[in-house]
Image: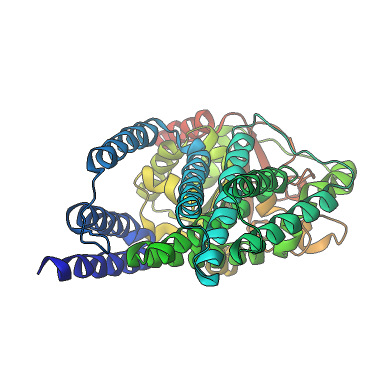
Amino acid sequence: MIETLLPILYLVASVTFIIGLKMLGSPKSARKGNLIAGFGMCLAIAGTILFHTDSAGTHLHNIPLILGGIAVGTIIGWMMAVKVKMTAMPQMVSFFNGMGGACAALISLMEYKETGSVSAGHGAATMAGLIIGSISFSGSIIAYVKLEERMGDIRFTGQQLVNNGLLLAVLIVGACLALSALTGFPLALLLTAGALLFGVLFVLPIGGADMPVVISLLNSFTGVAAACGGFLYNNMPMLIGGILVGSAGTLLTVVMCKSMNRSIWNVLLGNFSAQGAASGATEGATGTVREVSATDAAVLMAYAKTVVIVPGYGLAVAQAQHACHQLENELEEKGVTVKYAVHPVAGRMPGHMNVLLAEADVSYDKLVEMEEINPEFPTTDVVLVVGANDVVNPAAKTDTASPIYGMPILDVELAKQVIVMKRSMKAGYAGIENELFYRPNTSMLFGDAKTSMSALVAEIKLI
C-alpha cells in the first residue's frame, strides 16, 4: 500500500500544478491558483519525506537536515514577502528565481559527483541542468542588482564575441562531460564557473526597459533546469513542474517580445537602450507643453462620461495605487465610467500593474488589456496617464527612426483629453522624448503621483 501511495500523491501534486497554472491566467483566479499549486508542492514534499525509498528500500536518512532547510527557507521567504514593497516586487521575483536556478545547478553538480555520466541521456540531463541552472542563477542575481539600481548597463568592445565564445566553450565542455569524453569533478566545477560567468555577461548589457523580458526568460531557464533534475531522479512533480514553468516562461517571453515588436535576439543583444541613446534621446520631440492644476483636472474628469486610467511604474514608485482606487470611487459616485488600460510591458515585470492594482482592491473587471481598450480611446472623454511613458508614446507609430518604432502602444492620444501625471519631463526607459506630452489635447500635472492623486480626490469631493 505504501509503495503505491507516493506515486498517487505525486500524481495529485502534478495535477494541482497544471490547475494552478491554468488559474494564474486570469487575475480573478490567480490567487486561488497559486494556493492550489502551493498545496500540491507541500503534498509532494510531505510524500517524499514520509514514503520515499531508494532501490534498496531504505527511507530518507537526513530528514532533520531537510526539515531544517525547509524551516530556514520558509522563514526567509516569508520575511522577504511580507516586507517587500510593490515597487521592489520584480527584484524579489528575480532573486527567488535565481535561488531556484542555484538549486537545480547544485542538484546536477552533486549528481555528477556521485554517479558521473551513467548514460548519454543521464549525462545530457545532468549537464543541461548544471549549465542552465548556473546561467539562471548568476543572470537573475545581476538582474536583481540592476533592478535595485546598484548597477547600470555595462558594454564593452567585442562583448558579443566574448559572450558567444564563452557560451560555445561551455557547451563543448558540457557535451564532452555528458558523453564521458572528458571526466573529473574539477572539470565539472570549471564548467559551473564558466556558466556562472556567462550568466553575468549575458545580463550586463541589457537595458532596464528589457528587464521584464529578461526576468521571464530566466524564469523559463530555471524551469528547464528543474525539469532536468526531475528527469535525473525520475520525480514526476519536479519534472512536470519544471516543464510547466519552462514552457510558460518561454511563451510569456515570446508574447512580451511581440508586445514590444522586437525579436528575442534583439533583446538579448541589448540593442534597445543602445538605439535609444543613439537616436531619439538626442533629437526628442518639440512643441508647447501645457500644464494643468489639480483643480482643473478634477473638474475635467468629474464632468466626463468616461475616464480611462493608464498605470505605469510611476504609480508603483509613489505607492499611489490606493489613492488611485479612491479616485476611481469618487468618479463613479459622480456617474463617471472608469476603466484601467494595462499595457503588457507596463512596470518592471509581467503583470506588475495587475498585482499593484489588485493590492488596492481594484475590481479585476476594470482592468482592460491593450487590444480591447484601444478601440475605445476615440470615444473616451479623459485619459489619466499615471507614470507611464514609452507605452503611450505616439512615436512608436510614426517615427521610423525611433527605437520604439513598431511597438504596439496604448492609443491614448486619440482621446478627447489626456492628463499626464509625472514628476518631470524626464524621458522614459527608451531614453527618448514622448510626443504625447506636446499634443494639443494633452495637459501635464506635475508632482508626486500619490500627492497629485490625493489632491484630485479632494477636489472632486468638493464638486
